[in-house]
Length: 217
Image (cartoon, rainbow, N blue to C red; front, side):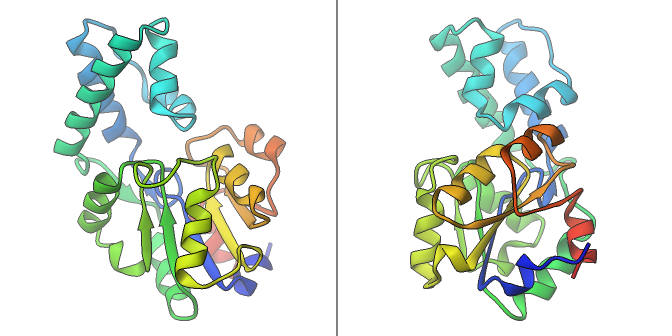
């Protein structure tokens, strides 16, 4: 299927984890380090991937019976561990560099993630993809997805209307944020979120991964 939306969009905004990069093992390793400090059993990558996109703290609450003090301790330990080793096994998905290189020639690119700004910058610099983006917005700067505030900020900063822009992501929150401001959205179904959840939410176009999206142009 050829993408109609991407060539016609004036501004392209990407999610990061599960969209452009496969970071699941490093995220899981950091979380299990934090869990071990509380004498809690390790979690599998498969379990984490399906839950963490809904919010790390929300996921932690489900693991510790909503003990907020424990949630706070685990989250802080997780964040520290992740910042120390964010790139041990993380890599860009096939097709990421080709797609970014192609799009960068004709339109501005931006990134919006619920990951903290410092972690976004650290990972993107390490993977040498930061230079493709005019704007990078982490989840601690503006209200996180599914709130559309960060998308609106990016559109205003780069001078493009939401209705002429597109959000590309792998989570329900990505789609909800885009639709809240009449922005088109493309869902990648082999990221961190179950495909059926994405299809239930609805998007303008669906592709298995960034590689298939690149192949659609």
